[in-house]
Every structure is written in structure tokens, then in C-alpha cells.
Amino acid sequence: MPRLRSILSVPGHSAKMQTKALQSTADLVMLDLEDSVALAEKEAARRQIIHTLQDLPEHHPRLALRCNGLETAWFYRDVIEILEAAVDRVSVLVIPKVENAGDVACFSRLLDGIERHTKAQQTIRLHACIESPTGLVQSEAIAATSSRLEALVFGIADYSRAIGSPLVSLSGHGENEESVYSGHRWHYVLSRLVAAAKSVGLQAIDAPYGNFRDITGLEQSATKARALGCDGKWAIHPEQLDVIQQVFSPTTTEIELAQRVLEAAQVAEKQGLGAVAVDGRMIDQATVQLARRVLDKE
Ligand code: COA
Ligand code: MG
Image 1 (cartoon, rainbow, N blue to C red):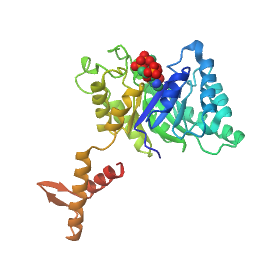
Image 2: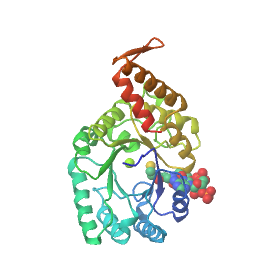
Image 3: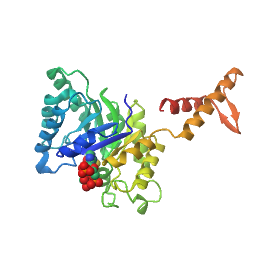
Image 4: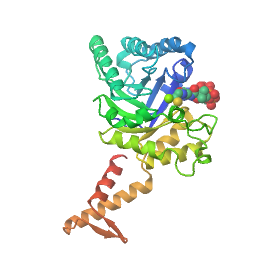
């Protein structure tokens, strides 16, 4: 499964931003038809996305499409019209506002049909956005629904609205959270989403940070998400990509620690020991596995 440290959202109506996003270093570029597109522009944005996709010189392996949600009048045409026109240009379909396993199953079956009809060369993967309490309590079932799924994504602004939590910043996307809660306001939500995702081998992706001029705030938000087990974070501006990619990659200190653990483990193995002391710290087989995982992620 490809690593998803950074996912850059780009409004579906903006040809200029799409060109820029496609040249960026994002692990995935998401052409968005949902909340970055005005209601009156939904169909124009769909046409723009088809144009962008058909204009690509070749298959772009890092392209996602976010369609509108199942509760709208647009979602089925978003998927059918765009994928019939350019099925082999899209690697991932991002589903907003997923509430239960049936929502994912619906998109999965729709994709089965489109891929058969278009004789697609690849299987489109799915990301499910968890952005309501209903979605969160169903997240374990959602994560286990379809072999197409590769990630669960936290939708912070919609989740805040759905649970009746206050708007604490202009954007409503992750800033100024400490003003209403002294701990980490999204600790439970992210931890539950991470457990649901990881229990079936999916990646867990944090919501975007709305203040795109505040790189320090972005770094803090991403660092907390990574500590809770998230693999990556959405970006809404190209200037957020470097920090996000850096935070979701192992640091030099982590790599050095992991190497020391493996060296100590080799010595221990020769001595027939499972657990050893290094500098007054215990290293056992779980530490070794953790260290291997750090180095795998390099
Ligand atoms: N993808 C690609 N390019 C982007 C971009 C994005 N998400 N956001 C900004 N840019 C480009 C701008 O077009 C501009 O390009 P230019 O230098 O060639 O003119 C450059 O980056 C600098 O942009 P800036 O002036 O700092 O911001 P802006 O006022 O143009 O855009 C937003 C600000 C918030 C409107 C814009 O970043 C945006 O639409 N982000 C995505 C929103 C979204 O997808 N929301 C839904 C998911 S939560
Ligand atoms: Mg949302």
C-alpha cells in the first residue's frame, strides 16, 4: 500500500490550482467536488476535472477524486461521468461523510460495474471520511467493509458541527483548540479512528489544518496526530506539504534509536537472551519489532 503522508486537496473548479497541485510533492493529490466547490459550480467543476484528467499525458499514480456525499443529488454522476471518461487516471475515490458500512459497499459495487464496463486496467481504491458521531461509532464495521479501502480520514469541521462542538477559529479546521479544552480536543476521536483503521491494516489520516500561514500550528497538529498513530494528514495549501511530510517521516533521532535497538538485539540473540538492558533501559522483542517498523518507514 503506498504511503499517505500528505494528501493535497484541490478545488474541482480551479484549473490553475490543479496544474500546480499535480506538480507538487504530495503523496496524493485529491481533486475535490465536495466542500471546496460552491453549489452552483458542481457540474462545471465535474467538467473541469474531466478536462484535467484527460489532458494528462499519462497515468498519474497519485491522483484521487473526492465526489459529493451519498446524501446529495450529485454523487452518482460525479463517479460515473468522471470515471467513464478517465477511469485509468484516478487511483483513489474519497467518499465524504461515510455513516455506515453500507455506504462504502454502495460505492464499491458502483466501482465494480464501472471498472467492468470501461475494462479498467487497475482497481480503484477507497478512502472513507469519518465526520460524524454515527460514522465514528460505525468505524470498525466501515473499515472492514471492502478490500478496496486503504484509509480512514478524519473530517474535523463536519464532525465538530455534528457533535455540537463550538467553532473556535475562523476556519474550524484544527486551530485554537486549546481555548476550549486543555487536553487534546480530538484525542478520543483520532484514537478510535486509528484503532478501527489499523485493526484491518488501513492507514489513518488526520484532518487538514485551516490556517495555512501558521506553519508552527500545523506542525504541532500533525505531531499530535502522528503520536496517536496517524500515518498522514490532509493539506489544503501546497506550502503545508513539506512540514506534513517531514512530521510523518521518522526523525534522525528515531532512526538512530532504532538502529541501536537492532544492534543490541543482535548481541542479545547471540547470548540467547530475549530481553536485555542497554543504558539502564529494557529492550525486548516488542522493542525490536517497533524498531524494525521505524526503519521500514525510512
Ligand atoms: N492546490 C494547489 N494550488 C494551490 C492550493 C491548492 N490547494 N491552494 C493555493 N494554491 C496556489 C494558488 O493558486 C497560488 O498560486 P499562484 O502562486 O500560481 O497564484 C499559490 O498556491 C498561493 O496561494 P495563496 O495566494 O497563498 O492562497 P489562495 O488565496 O490562492 O488560496 C485557499 C487559499 C484556501 C482558497 C486555497 O488554498 C484552497 O482552495 N485550498 C483548498 C481548499 C479545499 O480543498 N478544501 C476542501 C478540503 S478541506
Ligand atoms: Mg467534511
